[in-house]
Length: 123
Image (tube, rainbow, N blue to C red):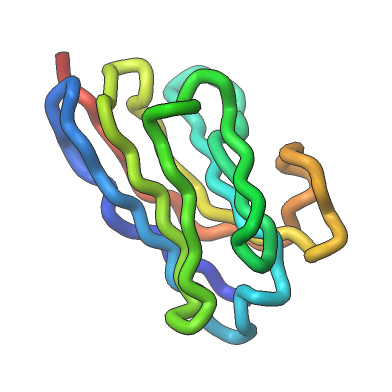
């Protein structure tokens, strides 16, 4: 499956952005989907994940209550709604896909990765 992330940009602190991850090649209903991010000089970190059917969502503590992951399997797209953004959210955001059977949040469990979209939050 090929993944294409979009929706990044420059936003002021307190603002919102919605990232999209469009898949092609295979239906995303076959995959657990996730978002990760990598800030300059830092390791890639888990942000959010959603089960293949959409019933379960998981979040990093740092984004819980502010970010919402969702999926539209009919559109083969995953979303990340980001609210109350802070400069600490500045990073390149990647969407990723893991087998349905994977239940973790480690990057190593995700087989497919998009190219990343840059989110910059100004103070």
